[in-house]
Length: 168
Image 1 (spheres, rainbow, N blue to C red):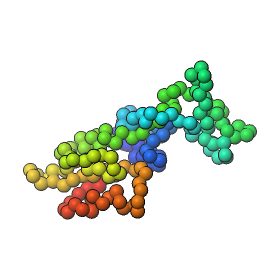
Image 2: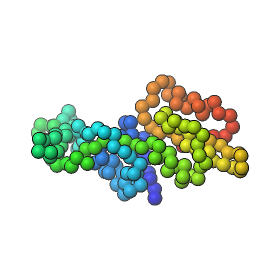
Image 3: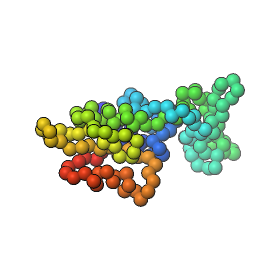
Image 4: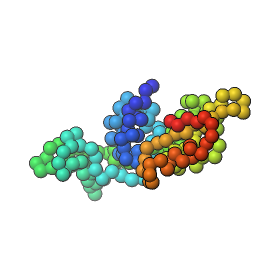
């Protein structure tokens, strides 16, 4: 199955996180593949995307009522879009489960076990592509997210490696 929507969403979303409703809309038919690579962050959305974003009242605000119901309301005056009834599962913020993604890619590419990678940085080693016994090259994955520094800093480890390597 193609995962074009999944990768595009990772590129577009700040911190690779969004509410579950937005993830489902973004991924569409790719949800069965991409959804399992996400995990709840513990946060709930305070707003959700509008179908007609525009003015200062966009995006729709999420209102939680005492009776447990949740509603997204348009903040424009006059209202531009309809209010929307939501379930709690709709407003759960889902973020990329980076360890699960790296394992899935390593399995799909038949990579050998990675050496010792923390998996916390922007660039992580996900395994080794073995050419023949005792000879292979490391494979790294760069996932979008908040990077600090001059922009090249997350790739410093790659520059220190001699010989072939792959960056996904």
